Structure formats: C-alpha cells, structure tokens
Image 1 (cartoon, one colour):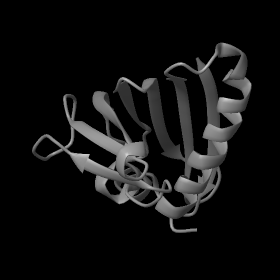
Image 2 (cartoon, one colour):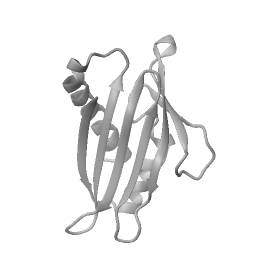
Image 3 (spheres, one colour):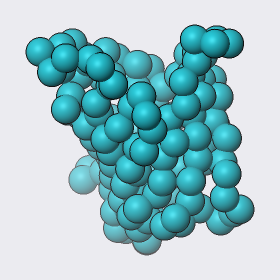
Image 4 (cartoon, rainbow, N blue to C red):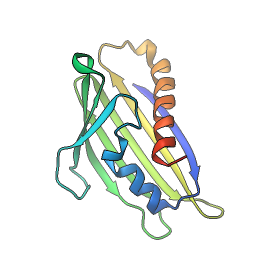
Length: 146
C-alpha cells in the first residue's frame, strides 16, 4: 500500500480544526472533481458511512468510507478519527489526528493515509504516496481556510 503523512500547524484550535475536517460534505470540491455524499444520518460517529465520487461521467469511481474510530478532542486533549476505505477501486485507511499545539494557541494536525488503487502495481506505491500527499495537502489547505 502507498503510505503517506501530512503534518500541519494551524492557528485555529483543535475543536475548530476537528469540525472543519470531519464535516465530510465540506470535502466536496477540496479534492478536484470529487463530490461527497454522507449516506448515514447525523451525528457523525463510529459507523458513519460516506462516499467520495471522483471523476466525470463514465470515468468516475466511488470511494465508500466508514468511520471506525471516533474520538473528538476534549478540552486540552487530542482527537482521532479513522476511516476504512471500502471501495472496489480504492481501499485502505485514513487517520486524522488533531491535538493542541505545544506552544501558543492553535492545533497540530496529522493526516495519515495508506491506500491501494485497484490494478496499480505496487512498484508505483512511491508515486501514489507523493500524489496522495500533494492532493490531500491541497485539500487540507482548502478545508483549513488557508
């Protein structure tokens, strides 16, 4: 699988960062040509399912995901969310961790993802990791409002 990690520091606090990153519908448009549909009723928690549909017309694919860990940040504490990717084209997992910054206001964000793209040879994992880091790094910039 293609593993990558993105670390960000933001001036927004952990609770605000958590809300921005776990509002799945907000992810629509943060990744090019992708629309998110949440298929389970609110509130978000373990068992929430949503689908990212990426592409145009017949060249699109669906990437269903399920929340399997849901630990929102408490006062002064860290939060963690883990998603399992259960699609036919993309499988793997993603984790979002948000914690207070060690110094000053703000939060530290760690996004980890390990993905496998159907029929893509493992020899291309380094390229897939770089592409994932780039695409999701730009998505985080949009979601965090930078």
